[in-house]
Image (cartoon, rainbow, N blue to C red):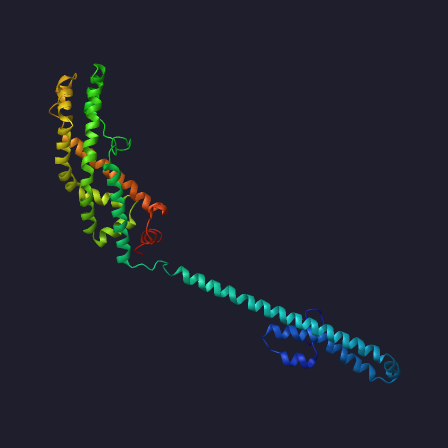
Length: 316
């Protein structure tokens, strides 16, 4: 039984035989498009061979030939259109595959071209900037006193004493005590800069890895672990001399002696130690704020290396 075209027309016998077992759908489609034309030619040839139809055929032959030419032209146009459509589909599929391949390639490659040494150098640069700015802000005049986040207030044990002093008209003495403590912290803070720089130079590759992959204040925590002892040693004499110079110690002694209940805590509180501890707390707070800015704010990444380091995943 002859093969059937998609519109119901049978393929010519010789076409059917040549395409038998052929797996190319494009060739089958083209053959089926030309099937009606071949069938029409076969029909004309058969009709003209019948004796009673020879005269009629001679009369209608010009019209039939013209129709045949029109049909051939139509079928040729349809075939060309089908071929062009198939070519366009195949061509359009190639860029899509190429793009998919490019996307897959990009997914498997780290965009950063920085080496581990460059990344560590970028981190150290960031820490030098953040600690330098923090020390500068805290160590200037009013750096502690006018910053509500780090201002040193009377210790909890002395707050009740301070209230009592204000009640008896000694409020100025209490204010002077707070001002003196903050001035001592502001004078001590600049001594932190060389200590921070030394800690940065000594930073190991493992330290850098932990900082880069840690939280937003991982570097600040590193400084607390490595610098607190040295900072305490450096700050203590400066704080003590500063408190003496501005008369804070004398005022403190006066508060303790004259305020109701002051004598009860006279031997339980070390003013120097308290101010040094609060200076450390305030300084580390400022370092942490600057660290967060550099990690999260592109505007704070003031060099090309900083932008590169903090914009890409590290140490995969």
